[in-house]
Length: 85
Image 1 (cartoon, rainbow, N blue to C red):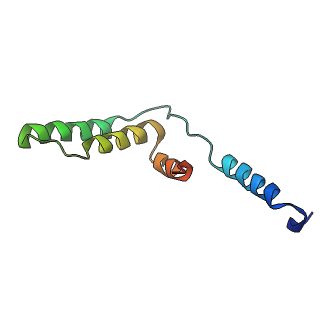
Image 2: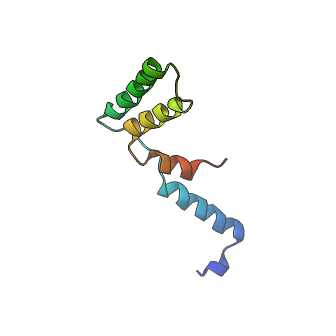
Image 3: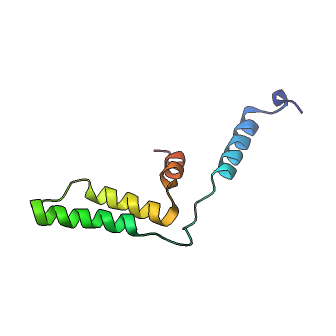
């Protein structure tokens, strides 16, 4: 069958199906390396101890390092591909 034999709705459904197949939900890594998370947390504590204030983005940096530690370095590529907002 040629593409012209399919309706727009059928083609869209097939594209969505293929898109879902191409990006399965990530699984946590078997071994988690917490070193970068601990380094980031230490930076927050050091900043508070030395300068008495916390970087306003510190929580986001820690979140990013936790996600990468658990799911791998490419987790945010998957998140960005799947985020429809």
